[in-house]
Amino acid sequence: MILVIRKLQMVACLAGFILLAGCGKIAQKQTPKIPEQLAAKRELYKSLQHSFLDPYGFSPNKCDSVLFTSLCKTAGGCEAADIFAAESKEEPGRWYRHAEHDCFDTGGSASDISKDMFAGIGTYLVNTGNDAARRRVSAYGSAHDWVMGRGPLSRTYLTPPLRWIFSDVMTVATDDWIPTPTNKGYTAHLDVLSILLRATARGNKTTQIELQYLKAQRDRVPRNAMFQAAYHKYADGDQSHAAAILLNENLFPAAGIPTDENYCTDYLWQRDDEPSDWGPCSDGHKKDGIDFLFAAWVAYGN
Image 1 (cartoon, one colour):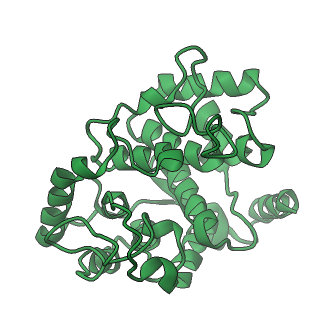
Image 2 (cartoon, helix red, strand yellow; image 1 turned 90 degrees about the vertical axis):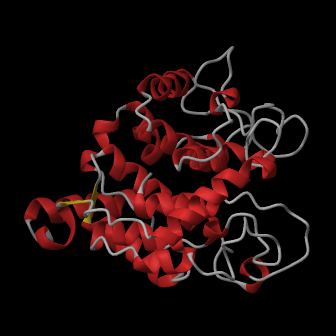
């Protein structure tokens, strides 16, 4: 179904039917200056963060750790973490969910790695210009038919929209792929992250089709600061909506990193705005501030 939609989009573009609506590239708008109050909160969270991370400096959400730690490092946090500790030394280009490489063996996860982990890894590698590490992923994937580890193929098979990032970033220059229908929850987070990743690989340019998808997610969960920041990054450069969420004391207190009294889930942007996730609880999980840092980075850079 997606291939059919993709072909129809390409035909329409070639025929000129949606020249104004879908085919052209849209450059990132001028980045506004980060508000002083938000900049101060970002530096505070970075300074406090180390006590909330695990002994490797990784996100404490162990078997999703390489995703969140990659996003954290992209945003200038998790400075002590060596993200490449999650890459195999024996099989370069093979990545695991955590520096200990044991989530599958211990039953902590049904797979060694997954597509959302590679979206995080790709975000870090592309934004830091680490082409050598990106090529190692490509070489490993090509040698293993793009099955990137043990576990169900639904998790471990690297699909083309992500594969292109590691194979040759230039191939995404004509890629208008978006999911149909509009996804929800953690899949929506992966969609938006993937669009941002492709846009970065194009030289900070997105497409009309992708921008409409970003708008749909922004409208669907208006309190999601990452979705707000991603849409406005290319739509108009107005990051006041994302800033207002990040400055909301009920979610992100100025006195320190959020706790369960602020919200229950560990990373807000991969959850829809439901009380069970966005409301307070007493689960005792430590927050690490990665959701705040990454949304601020999408909006304002480093």
